[in-house]
Length: 496
Image (cartoon, rainbow, N blue to C red):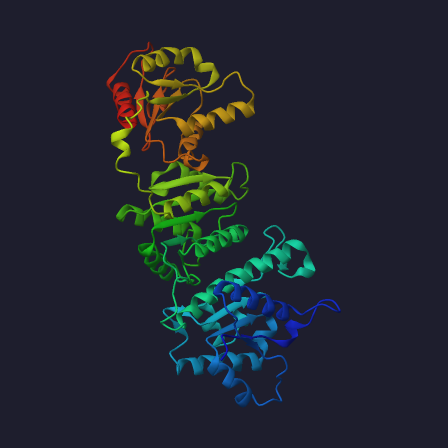
């Protein structure tokens, strides 16, 4: 009995150089080894090494189909043009339909491996309909700058070889998930996913390798990752699919890169933007933590994407119930794993034995160096209220000042942005920095945020509004007011 049947075009197994193994042969061997390692037992993967049109298709292959639990189609231009390959696939579907269907516990028994991409219009029916429903495992990448295709083949260097094995691991993990369904009931099913469900939004080509790494690690930890199939092409169908996935998910993750992304024909927003919008709507309807990764400042040359990224940071409708991360994906992965890990139970007796250590609430007052004299009365007042006041490092180098800025954001209980002589754009940047604090490694978002409107006052400053920060209006001479007192009270309550 076969565990896996590999359907491929024979021309795709011809080696690039004399004396080397063909791509299919290497693929077969690597997949077999990795699956055996994952399942802890030997497997039988079969492929036709010699059959041609003159052989008896029905006598030689139908028996292999009948015995196979999974079929792997290696998609290439030659594959879709081959009558023989089409017959293999159609015959597998026919035989599978008579023996339980082409799915097992809602997981497809057919896997699409894309060695060389093929345009949708070049795939003949009924293969086009079948392949459009399958999640593909791409063994290639496209250079976003040149559009040039790079296949994962050791002939093309160390990086291509590494990517090849990464995709082998992804494919092997998915196939093993299906094969475990066929294990006898007496065998332990410990390998089946028992973790949480994560919505890992589809992204642009530049971030696909990073998305694959996150997906791979989540699966290896026993979590389920959605979507498990390609998203449809029409916006209404995409929305139905995405919202159904979000309803099942414990957390949603969005990776937004330098490019805006593909836009459906019947939509004004890209697919990444649509997914972000729908996850925000889901977060408002029910508890749904969200993690959003953004590229570093200055990395985006796409004007549409630059405007979109700025909107995400400025408008609460986009970052509702979300932690923002910028530049460093490692922090996002760390936070994601923490969110999915079971909460640690603290010993009940510890509270009775150890008395809580009280310390003053810490407020970080962000100001421009030119405003330091004007900040002094405010700093004195906050200190007299029992608060620990932190200020930027005005006299330090740029590297040290940046380090202290992040450290203050990580450790403060609240932030107060002093809007004095600085321009409005500077205030917006500082408010964005507060949103990114979790991305710097902070355990949770900054709970208390404020903007202190100081002289010189003008019409634009007086019209300043914020959904995230409390706005405190000041007079020419410093004096306390109800807004400032409310800010101090909120800080102390947050500390408690």
